[in-house]
Length: 255
Ligand SMILES: NC(=O)c1ccc[n+]([C@@H]2O[C@H](COP(=O)([O-])OP(=O)(O)OC[C@H]3O[C@@H](n4cnc5c(N)ncnc54)[C@H](OP(=O)(O)O)[C@@H]3O)[C@@H](O)[C@H]2O)c1
Image 1 (cartoon, rainbow, N blue to C red):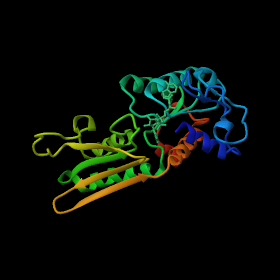
Image 2: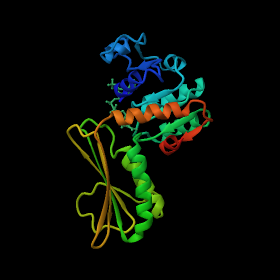
Image 3: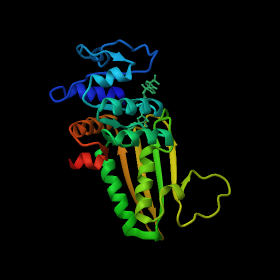
Image 4: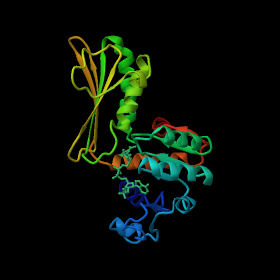
C-alpha cells in the first residue's frame, strides 16, 4: 500500500507533494530516492526510518503499515500536530487507545477501507439490515490475498458493526468467527464472520441476508489497491485545516 500511495501522490504532483516516506529500519531501501523507487525521475526525497523527522517534513501523514508502527506514527502526529490517515487494520486495544488519544488533538481518519464503494456498501447494509429485520440471518464473508496478516479483515468487522448496530446488540456480543465441529443450530442473534485467503485477491466482501425462501447478498470487490490509495490521499487532503477529531470516510466523501 505504501508504494500505491506514493504512485498516486507522484501522479497527482500538481496538487500534492511527497515530503517523506518511511520504511522499516534495516530495509535495503533506506536512502533510496522515492522517484527512483517508483521508476520515475528523482524527487529529492529519500526513504528513511525516522518517524519524527518524516512527520516534521510533511503537512499530513498516511499510514498503511502494522499496528506497532501505527502507534508510533499517531503518537508522533499528536506531538507534532499533524493530521493523520490510518489505513492499517488489526489494531489491538492499546493501538486503538493511542489512535483515540491522538484524535483528541489532531484531525484523523481511521478507516479499514478507503474505497468509495465500501463506504456506500456500509450504508446499504445498514439500511437492508434495518428493513429486513430479525427474520433474516446475517453472515459476512471476506476474501483476501494469501499474504494478508490479519483476519477477519477490518472491513468485515466494520460491516459487522454496521449491521449489528442496525439490528440490536453490538457485534462484540454477537460475532461468530468461523465454525468448526458440532456447533449446533445457528442462533437468531449471531453474526457469522468468515475469512477466505488465497492468490492475489485485492479484497472482496459479501454481506448475506438469509431469510426463509429468499436471500439478499450485497458484494463489493476491489480489483486494484490504487482505489484505497486514492481514498487515503483524498482523506489526507480533507483533513488539512480541520479541527481535531476522528473523521470517517463518509465525512471525507461528503466533504
Ligand atoms: N484501509 C484500507 O483501505 C486498506 C487497504 C489495504 C490494506 N490495508 C491495511 O494496511 C496495512 C498494510 O497493508 P499492506 O498490504 O501494504 O501490507 P504489507 O505489504 O505487509 O506492507 C506493510 C508495510 O509496512 C512496513 N512496516 C510494517 N511494520 C513496520 C514498522 N514497525 N516499521 C517500519 N515499517 C513497517 C512493512 O515493512 P516490511 O516489508 O519490512 O515488513 C511493509 O513495507 C494492513 O494492515 C492492511 O490490512 C488497509
